[in-house]
Length: 184
Ligand code: FAD
Image (cartoon, helix red, strand yellow):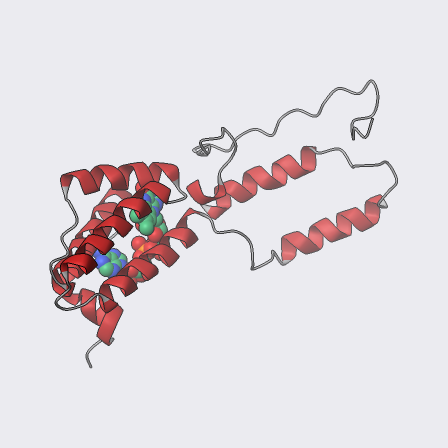
């Protein structure tokens, strides 16, 4: 049949979801919506519950050794978890603000507004995206100048910082952080 389940055996119990785990819109555990530790806890449990594909295909000792090696040195090129995704995204957004024109044309202003609107719809962590869309309804994008957009974005980022109990960033410093580098 091609089924990996031996005839007559009952299916393995489903992996128990770690406390606080957020599911994706497809009802499956979502890497981009969870911290790495939460997702890894679920993934290693799910892996340990999986029956081997074919009995004897991989000697048990070799499989155990490979598993232990993988645990000791997890690969560095995995898909991003919620926090990695967040850091990279803020880097991109603030860098866009840093190169946004000092005096943008009407077209440039409408481009950045359209970009932010689509960004907020497409952001891979769905509950982050929904909160951000709500924020953008309340605080519509301001982008009449680099300074205005940089500050708008800094305040938007601070709103997320506040929600997560992180320190509030001083928006007078956004350009030093993201464009010029720190003054001596
Ligand atoms: P980050 O918050 O990622 O910040 C990166 C760097 O930006 C900091 O080191 C600092 O130097 C600088 N910085 C910090 N604040 C500001 C600011 N206000 N202005 C300019 N620079 C600043 N995570 C959740 O758990 N729940 C959410 O609902 C959620 N929503 C998000 C929505 C969006 C649109 C994005 C992009 C991310 C969201 N995240 C959310 C992820 C979260 O914001 C962080 O990215 C993540 O927790 C990692 O945080 P961090 O401490 O490494 O620093």
